[in-house]
Length: 319
Image (cartoon, rainbow, N blue to C red; front, side):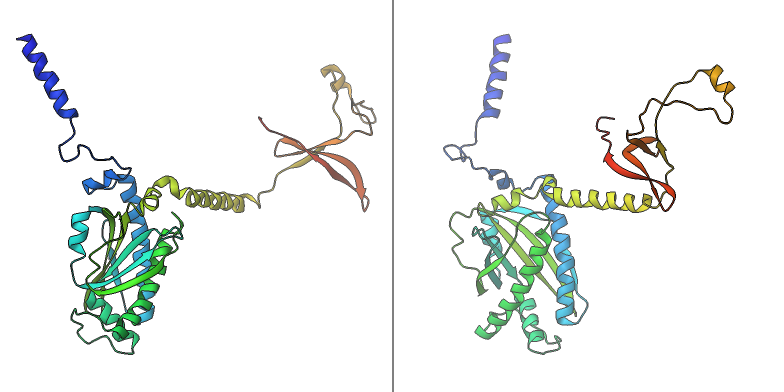
């Protein structure tokens, strides 16, 4: 009975440690954790912060371009596998491929065709009240939309400014459906979805950071990568404290020399008595501020008044 129980436990352990048949023989890649369709908590948190800033930047920019109130909401970022990516790219829309850095890391932008046509109408001087049903764009409309996409990419880059080097450059645009063949090696993506409302029109813009091309960019989406922002915050706090205390006045005193005297002699001291100090006339004096010696100084007179010339700042390291 005991041997049987041991065999059952051993078989259970081997079963848990065995790779699924679909995975056997496959090379494990650094970004395989994306295959589960999930991002780490830290990455989700940082990407969500980036997207919220992008939504704020874009809403403000589009509001100025179209002279209207623009509402933009960032959806929660998530990772999708190749099958879902290809399915999403089957929808009719306007697509653009762009690089995120000079290292040619490829990403895609998708825009609802209705919003793209609204953009064309407003850029051509229309009032935007025309109902823009989704349809492929003409060559002229595509050129106009390309200019709008350049503006959108610049605002998207602003959201990444505190996290990573992000210098997008548009490569090509498509109208209708995205190209059947994605950049070589793409097998997953991180999607950032933005919903837009303006003048009764609802639309969306989506960014797809293709993997493994953009893997190094996604890897920067960790709280540690915001060290520059944290350091800037600490510097500002330090400056705020300094501004608050810089007007505080401290008592200042100069110690010309030191000596010792008995209590009996102290009680006998009267006017005209001379007290001998250990210091020589040529030695520097200590200048005290805030209860401790801060400088060595040389006594002097200016306009008939006693003054101190600072010679050296005292080192208080380890104190």
